[in-house]
Image 1 (cartoon, rainbow, N blue to C red):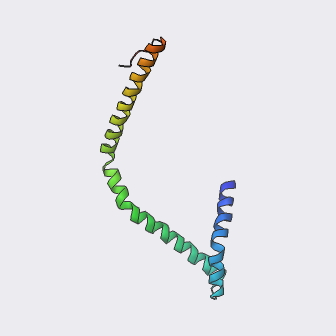
Image 2: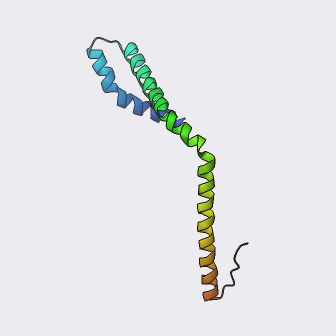
Image 3: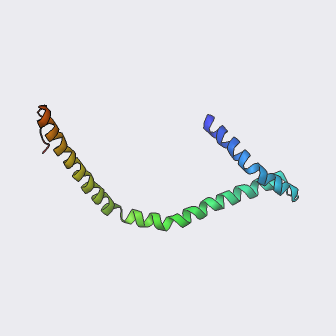
Length: 99
């Protein structure tokens, strides 16, 4: 309940100068709010459209990206296992290398 109220207050503060400027042009508050809403919605739609090509490419490459990430993580874990093994050997903790 708190987050929507805070969001509404922030949006009102951000867009009130635009509403006032539209009011000085003779546009009523209701029409000004509608214009601001449609403009903001159009801006969001334009951003999503512009990012959709890049996002589609990333999603198409997701299996390769995941394979590469898995290989790098396994390599890092392997190096960490070696470090743990040698540290336990040096300090006598008896660490065993994972299979």
